[in-house]
Image (cartoon, rainbow, N blue to C red):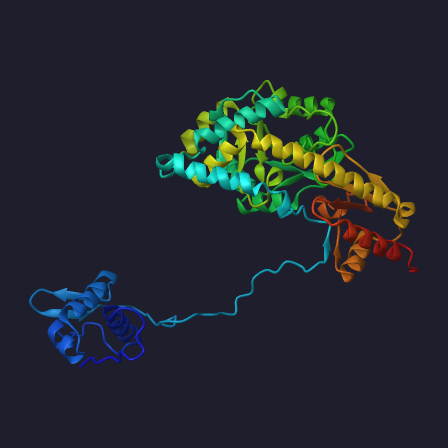
Length: 468
């Protein structure tokens, strides 16, 4: 007869009995096909009510551990090769190795974001207003492209800021550019030859690789990606950053842009993915027109993100499709769901439409211009300046530092790492092999304290002046 101990019971009585019987079944104490006590018998034996036993049996039946036969009673179901894997209660802890970020005191390789620069008060107020005024919309399933309010706000922003005339229905919203790239490969096909820039963003090759695509790499010159490299690689899709290339900082001039567009127009099925990841932070002059805005043949797919312009944790990105690809997108991929919650979409839409986004961009652009100037002046006034050249560019949150040294890039990185300082060089992003120039180091300055910069510069001078 089944009798259980209720002394250390955690939760309702029926749940405790259910767990005890389940454990007996999984451990083999109760065999498949074995008849269980009736409700009244088990209730009397454990001094509980028959309703409690009924609830326990009902739960076991619903999970498939027990079955009933009319007018006969309850029986143990056939459970194949089942054992108790987890403790019944309490916490579990397994020896699972998670990837750990390297521990550096000063890290010039990351575009970190200071909490002081995020408009928390405005974002909180808008969130409350949205939750109060759009209750029904918040509970409605978003279309794959995102809610129309946000797409309209993005279209208006692109028109005023980038001079792009687009229909909001050309915009597809997603949680991060990685997700949008996966949609694009589904749309365009993974049988196409995708070509990315070298030096370039290594993670991009990994993202495409996870989609079963073997990327090819095109070399660059001082104007950007070379058309002859696209031809050499027999490219179908060119994924490029013409407005502020990472890591070189090159802004592609108009002459090269029209060459790239001419290449795309030569054959059907060729497309350009224009990654405009941080165009908002151009420090001088007006923003450079996008490839999308000067493309007359619907060959450019424009991609941008709010992760750079607002905060890295705002995982909202978007792409703008040429008109003829929009219909194909909905025909092929409309079964997907939008990956951004309605709460975030409506809040961001209000943030843009009410002018807060423009104010935030203007404020951050001024902040970064001042920070950039301060960093460069600090370098010029330091002992390091006689051993380096500063290679500026007109946008983005990094610039390059060329070091006059006989040390290899790897050696410089290694010696700085011993001092808990991390810095990346352009050769780290060489995807072709031996093509990238050495001694060009990348300085991301967005959230580095000035005293840390001064400390790092002094350590770098010590390294460069050490005798081999």
